[in-house]
Image (cartoon, rainbow, N blue to C red):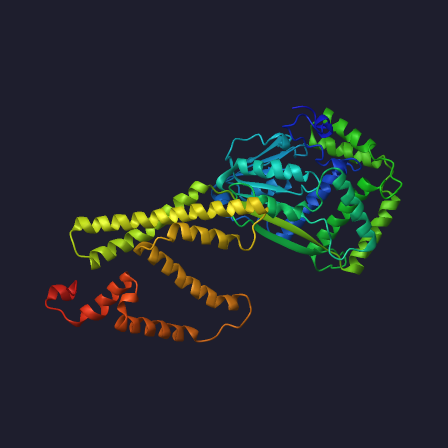
Length: 509
């Protein structure tokens, strides 16, 4: 596989291999690994407290019963070890280029030292849950687009979930010094081919990946950066995380800011040699700490800048945003299958009852009617789901992300192509949907806070509906849908007379 140092320094093995030259390299150039690891662990604590849990994907039932979970870029394994304790029936694999793994681990956890941009070393459809976070400084946008999303998708099972969590680099209400530092840091990221705003593009790139469900779920937390909010533990934790992150950033861009930092490459080269000789996380951390202490403690200029940044956080009311994206892996053939199954489940009992209750003729003819009606309903729903999902994917692929009108266009084309034939089955389906659309549109102004919900509207609505249907049945019966006519004929006309106990108990004819 090669040494870690060779992999970090190898920018291009061949045209087909995407190496991980940026991975933690931006920070490791000028920071010891223990400090970087500590920042990553603080970020883990902030995410857990901010979301009141370690994940958002609706995967809990599967984790409880037993699932396979992959954590890409697992670092020292804080997330995966907590998950293994919370859901011990599941099995967990953490993978990372840097061997920061703990020397002791839970029984259901495995750690793998591997450069995952050379390919995740797992077969297709292996995991129920794939998790990745804090990678915005480590992967180029090209690596995300051309490799990472599709590779996460490849190893995820159909019906499994993929979840990505990353902070937004741009802060809300930045002070002038913080803004200058962020500007320099953004330029350094861009010089390495890293898009500093890639977090905001996750949903767009994610949704354009084949077999990703639509829409991609997106949650975010806007967190206050303040050490003075003693009552707010999350704000305290997040402030510590931000200041330690800025310490690493300042070490990384010190030369751009003309700070007196003389240890830029010595520390990283020493650390990489240590990793090369000793593939052991405890030894690496000890070496990192010793290397740090030899530098003479904290740099005075960085400490001064950090104090200024902290003051600006307080004075300007600076806030930061962390985003989480999650989606399930789907299969187009499953859409066809589910449409067919649902169509059969809905139509078969309805056709069976209507045939034997209202239709005349032999049992054979009635069963044929049930079969034909079920087949038509099942086939049309399967076709519509397939057409709709295909058109949604094509539109996302062409435009780059899902837009507001895409579902309408896909439904419009699918409706015309599949349900455009005027037959009894399609009429019933379209009228069923139409009725629910009208109710939904009536509720829309209330849902969007345009108006308050009117009181006692349903009795009036019911009265108007029944008034119109009875009037039409009495005077213009032919305009009503045939099955409704048959039902009303049975209820209101056939009930006017009966000739024997048999048709009184069973049928009026």
